[in-house]
Length: 455
Image (tube, rainbow, N blue to C red; front, side):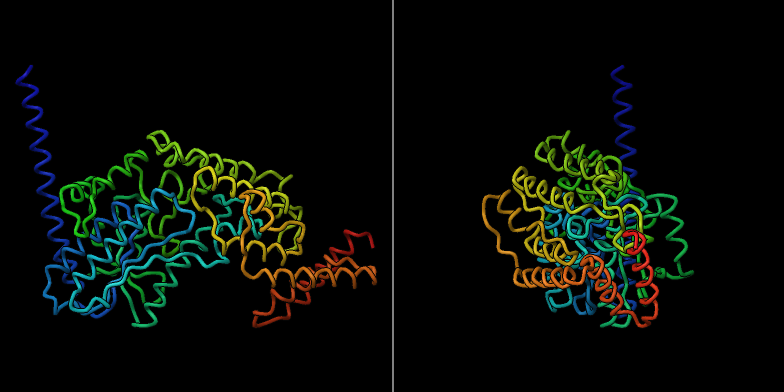
């Protein structure tokens, strides 16, 4: 019996040694391939870094590859690009930020002869594209698989804009990603679709951008073997990364999303803590089960957003376009979401919404002609302290303008809301190159107004 146990342990050790040796051999080949591709042209590299296992493996390999080159050969820019939707899982954000700081310091040492060639950037969505402005400000319903309004605004646009700006400066750019064919059948098919025969690069949907995927052929097991058995070149401990995965039941990270061919979050991936595209956030649930009790209020709030999405009592009876149908959240619902969110900040003792977003929400409410609720008053009631909201004078002026409109409309027995809808329609068409459709749109609004008011 003892001999059998010893033989089994010996066999397992042999298997481990064989796997480790194979991974060492394969990664040495990848390092040479990275060096060859880097020296092939003068195009800048944009390395997608999410902080997960695959992007970490790619960046490690690049660090080792470039460190082995002669400093005089390091002549082109290298960008390490991350995305923060501003509603990421807090644990992941803290981990990512600590990594980015180390990466920047280590990268400057590799490019010591010209540190300006190495850049670390974390992009965020524009203020008008943030989650809270759209959910609370505009009343967009919580995202689902059929109306996933968040991905393009919060992920694709910020990263694509950074890439396009780099392309505009250099003519072309190479995007280096940790995508692997073993991730899924769909991922393998997508990668094959854009491959260029005979070359390492494949086409990207963005103009003049190409994708280089050094670890495309590696398996998940091989990635972990490489990470655990290779010293992290920027001084991080890959055991911490493994611990993060284990706390969430060894799930996959949310990749850096640069277009609609990149798999977004969903299912069990690390991602936005408010994500309602999935029925249940298993990653955060697993973190709670593994000791992160402070996250319980977050997951309760997320589950509530999921539940109210299709509650017609909490939705307008008309869409933001003016068409009949289930529309955005009502103003009362938006107010309730904001109140719950501000209370949630107190429970978890973390900032979950920025001052800029609060100001933008107030501006959006005023633009929608809703002056019943004041963001600053709600904040004071919940937090017990005042808040200085930028652009408050602009908000007050909009309130005064609407009050004047109400007075004029009252004198002429006209519904001010109807006039405001027509004014908004005019504003929406200001940026259109061809404006002839505005008359048809106005006709539809007027006919609907007449019908609804029995004229």
